[in-house]
Image (cartoon, rainbow, N blue to C red; front, side):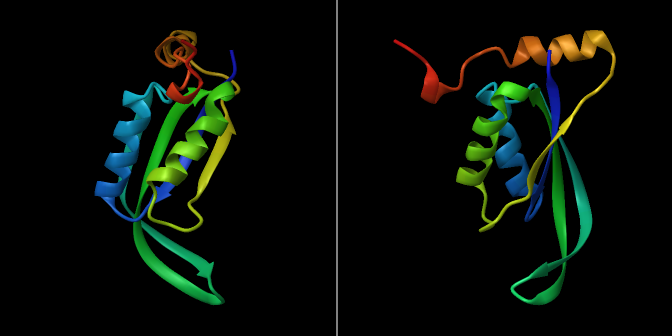
Length: 113
């Protein structure tokens, strides 16, 4: 069982909630946590930017990562959204099993008739 955390930044809590609800409703993530506000300092278009953002932490399975990234990009307001996957090496087996069970369904685009 290969489980992952996805770290995603969003423009604001409302956008984070929209993305998080879609990921959970579509069974691409078992759970999404939203942390807000977060202060960000980053390079964009040749200048240092300072913004307030929201963070999503999604729990999912490794085989779904490509689908999750595509879905986040389709819902996101940023041109280049931050979506990174971090492997979960160890954890509560019951919790990791729950992630596995709650994300079993194939993404809608891949469902077969």
